[in-house]
Length: 65
Image (cartoon, rainbow, N blue to C red; front, side, top):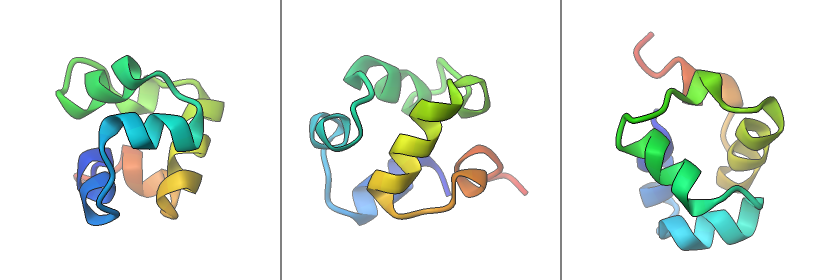
């Protein structure tokens, strides 16, 4: 599952997710558009996003597996 898929499942905008997890909306958008790899995010940011989306962080970085 990608961050975008999880976010849309929860019915959240990028801005709303950013407010929930404290990660800059530009960073979330960069990952969602493929400009950045979620596996290269700071661990605390990835964990914060996963917690806000109620998903396992491993699933967000290994969605192709």
